[in-house]
Length: 35
Image (cartoon, rainbow, N blue to C red; front, side, top):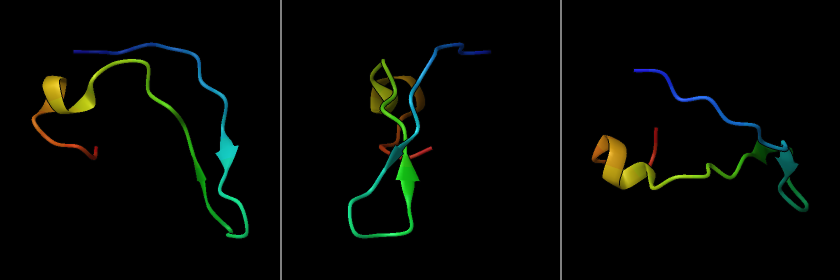
Protein backbone atom coordinates (compact mmCIF):
# COMPACT_ATOMS: atom_id res chain seq x y z
CA UNK A 1 0.00 0.00 0.00
CA UNK A 2 1.27 3.48 -0.85
CA UNK A 3 0.33 6.75 0.81
CA UNK A 4 0.99 10.01 -1.01
CA UNK A 5 0.68 13.47 0.49
CA UNK A 6 2.49 16.78 0.57
CA UNK A 7 4.05 17.95 3.80
CA UNK A 8 6.24 20.76 5.03
CA UNK A 9 9.36 19.71 6.93
CA UNK A 10 9.23 21.57 10.24
CA UNK A 11 12.09 22.18 12.65
CA UNK A 12 11.78 21.53 16.38
CA UNK A 13 12.54 24.71 18.30
CA UNK A 14 15.92 24.79 20.06
CA UNK A 15 16.88 21.31 18.77
CA UNK A 16 18.63 19.87 15.76
CA UNK A 17 15.54 17.86 14.77
CA UNK A 18 12.73 17.98 12.21
CA UNK A 19 9.28 16.44 11.74
CA UNK A 20 6.27 16.43 9.43
CA UNK A 21 2.57 16.39 10.25
CA UNK A 22 0.90 13.40 8.59
CA UNK A 23 -2.63 14.19 7.33
CA UNK A 24 -4.25 10.94 8.48
CA UNK A 25 -4.60 8.85 11.65
CA UNK A 26 -1.31 6.91 11.83
CA UNK A 27 -2.40 4.79 14.79
CA UNK A 28 -5.60 3.73 13.00
CA UNK A 29 -3.79 2.89 9.75
CA UNK A 30 -0.70 1.14 11.17
CA UNK A 31 -1.67 0.14 14.72
CA UNK A 32 1.12 2.28 16.23
CA UNK A 33 1.60 5.95 17.03
CA UNK A 34 5.02 6.06 15.33
CA UNK A 35 6.10 4.79 11.95
